[in-house]
Length: 245
Image (cartoon, rainbow, N blue to C red):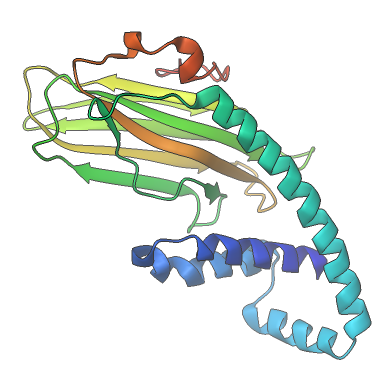
């Protein structure tokens, strides 16, 4: 029950961060909690009713949960602070813009609801030919020690009137990744899209991928990646492939 309640409150926390237009996904996140633990919502409700008759047992569970969450929150806060120090950089107003419109933190696993993250951005008059796109992602794989290695596939694409350009990479370990893509100077951009596909051959619901510090920066031609110090952009995560800096 302690493990179920931990996942239940984790799913609730994710739901609370969903933007209004994605609140329809609330049930999917809660279903993930029950599916992962091999129970139904009715079984969870019945168990909770049973524990309310034995408040001491329920209090003991929440005491352990509180201690666990405090430790993990402290650990996550320190990790996120370190990522921010390593990946953040400043640009002049008007020279670039962050196009990312989804949550900055996403939790993925092999559930049909949580194994794929996608975005699509139609262009407007603010886009220029020869713009450069930079997709920043911090990724943390969480898995039991005896699990089969996990991976994730990242893809960033730019659509023109009559063609497509793309870049991609595979993630195998915890770290930070940057996908960069320079757009065609002779073609008009019509749409930008990207995706993350989480892969775990064992289908172990105790394994997950946490994405954080997500941003999609668009630079106009007058400011290129060479103008930004490599140390400010981030460090190699060792995953290889694609345009990992």
